[in-house]
Length: 474
Image (cartoon, rainbow, N blue to C red; front, side):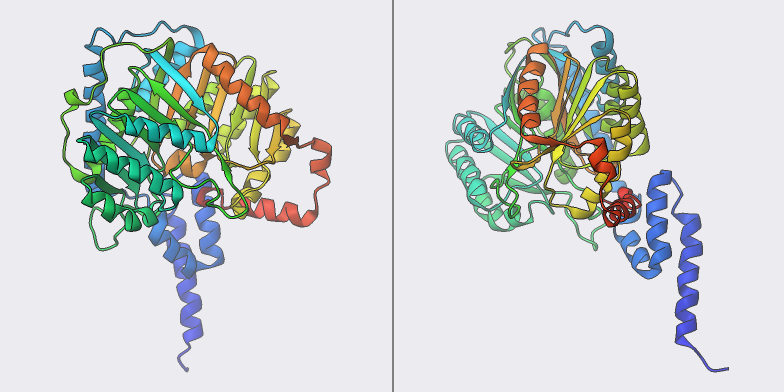
């Protein structure tokens, strides 16, 4: 009998299928296991290589230990904050009190009163406002961004950092190693020469024990100036047109008051993961005075937390809503519990509206997103396709008592893999300000009708349903 490489290859494929059929479902959701197994059964060797690169759920032990220390750091900052007379606890009741308690258990930060929240929905004015605050800094500037590009916007912010450092302000910058690879390479050396601390968050190096997985990214967008001014939202440090043909529209918020120290703690925790060096927190606490009337709370999330913090929060908010929920997100590829919560809220009589961009820069993810539309429309959920720009903003309003804004996409990647952060604001006036922006979105959107959607071409339906099989990989 002659030797056959073809037979060896076929047997190797079946060996991969059988072994992975047992291994993949271990400690994974059914959806994630299903997506990986479909890929592996279709193309075993390709699936095996991809799984080895980005599919293993193992998080490096050193990073888990550093994250545990970072969480401990967050808790200690929380204790220090509450020991200060100025940091009075808010008076919340009903669903607001229950949500605040849930968020504290998930992310270790409790709600704090006395904050001022300003919406910055216009792209360039938001960057200009950040630059002015950096130019006015007296003690320190801390920036953490997924994308810090070396384009005109990045150079503008980098120049402000260099000016601040030159006058004695301590400037520290964290850039995601993948999202900001160009900024690290082109802006990093000059910033470091000027004295600015520049660190790569979650560096990828297959020869390094503590290296991050390629698909585990720090997707946060945070700025803290002098411990008293904070920024959080969806906007990166990059030109709005960095995606060809689809300029971004964002939402950034500027906050003053006690909650800024929670953003500070998230930055310090991420910095500690990369340096294992602790800064003196007492020097970085904000001034001991209140800034406004808003109660606010920060929720971080990421692989180091025991729960999918933002997925848990949003599902809970959908169940808590009694009147209206408006959700804005650039990518909508949720898991089954999230979808079920949306449908349940709509069937209960809650007005549920989803605002997403009409033009997406991720075709397969967009097909997977569209595969959910029929189910949502049947439940009475309104779907609005925003046309003017690629709407990259990520925020939610619930009834008249809560607004949530941050870096979190409504997809499985943001919920389970990426490090994210959101700000919760319990203030009807701030919610009303968000509703003004959401009303503008809806006015410039095309609403998807159930009848028209049912007539979409068969080929498009096949693409959507096929893409949905990979929802856990997108």
